[in-house]
Length: 95
Image (cartoon, rainbow, N blue to C red; front, side, top):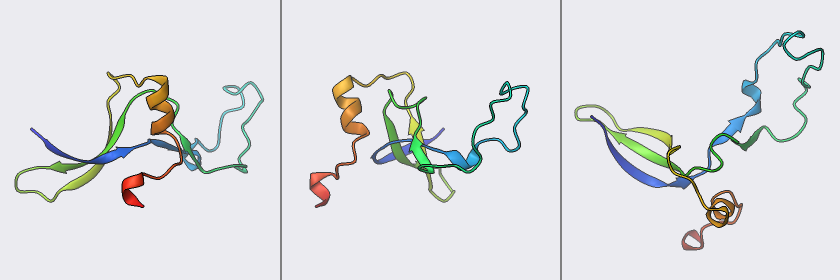
């Protein structure tokens, strides 16, 4: 049994440094991805882009609180809300 304290909404990022190395040429049909990693290291995770993601604090009795990222895959964001969720604009309350 877990108790969560929601810290706030966030976007789940995919770390391109975690791609498999080395890759199998047969699996990629001789078209290996570039291992030089040109571009951004962290990009929005496509699997979680349509779903709300929250930074939460896991509260367990007798244990230290743990920070985690929780994605609600059963929920779907509307296109407008999805655009807001993944925008780079800062929260006006934090300015």
